[in-house]
Length: 171
Ligand SMILES: [Zn+2]
Image (cartoon, rainbow, N blue to C red; front, side, top):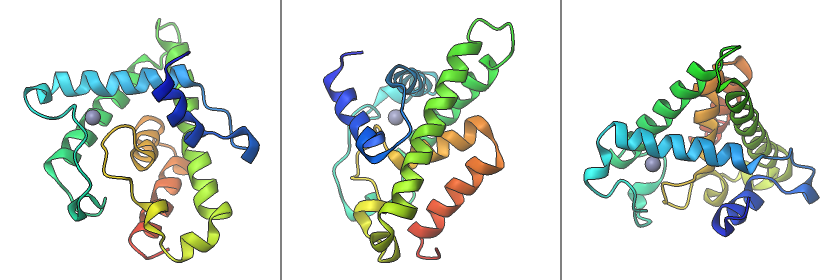
């Protein structure tokens, strides 16, 4: 795959020099495209859903906004498509498996960096670690939620819960 912006983002999602799990770029691209289709399915294309919004205080992830509600709904739509395809014999079975593995790898890499490598910053609730930059796509925090939506496993739930606890200052 040769999409410079995607490759630049993937460096943040998976760095081999840091012993991160490898993240399959095509699978993450599939999830991203499903997310965008979720916007279309929900009629979000009528306004600025596709445009990044500027960084403001309200963009801190703890504050719900209409944009974030739309983003979550699009993630949930994408997750539902992936779960539906995860049926042996379904033609999307292996693609679904790959997307799930990609989301798991991103979630694991993010959690490992937050909980182990950046332990000091985690303790200090460094906003650079716990909050996104205010842009809707793609967003590491949302990938943890997407991972949980797709897998619905205790591990994915625990990863997201730990992240939420750190972000709310309870971790
Ligand atoms: Zn979106």
